[in-house]
Amino acid sequence: MNVNMANTALLLMDFQNGIAAGRDEAVSNAVVAAEAARSAGIPVVFVRVAFRPGYPEVSPNNLRFAQTAANAGDAMTVDSPNTQIVEALAPRANEPIVVKKRFSSFTGSDLEVILRGLGATHLVLAGISTAGVVLSTLRQAADLDYRLTVLADACADGDPEVHRVLTEKVFPMQAQVLSTAEWAASVSA
Image 1 (tube, rainbow, N blue to C red):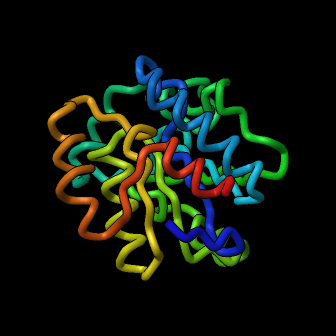
Image 2 (image 1 turned 180 degrees about the vertical axis):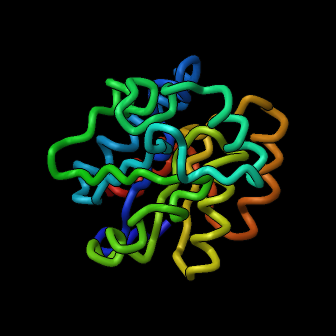
C-alpha cells in the first residue's frame, strides 16, 4: 500500500465507554493504529456519538435512535461518562473530537470541515460497530470521493458473522481492508 501521509487521517469512531466495553481486541488494535499514525505524522480524529439532554436531535421516525432516546436516560448525552472516549485511547490535546448525531460520522457533525482543514483525502477507518458507524461512514465517505482503508481488526460488531461479511465481502468494493499490523507497517516504512 502506498500511503501519502500528507493527505491521510485516521478516524477512531465510537470508541467510547458505553459502546467499547467488552471489545478489548478492537480497542487494543485501535491503540496500535493511533500510535502508528502519530509516529508517522498522520492526524488522528476521534468520533463519538452523543446528544443534548432530552435528545432534541432524535426524531421519533428514526427507529434506532428513538429507542435510545426513550430508554437511555442521560447515558447517551454529551457530558455522560458513557459517551467519553475510552481511557486507553485518550486523545491528545491537538487531536479533534467530533460529536455526531447518527451512525455516520458525517451526519450531524463538523467532520467534513475538519477533514478539509487537514487536507485529508484518504481516510483510515476503525470503529465499533462494524455494521453501524464503520459501514455508514464508509458509504458516505465513498460518496464524498474519499480514498478509504478499513482496519478490520480495529473494528468490532455484536455479530461476528456480520463483521466477517462486511470486512471480507462488502467493504472491499469501496475500500482497502487491512489488519492494523499491515497498515502500521506500511506507514512506518
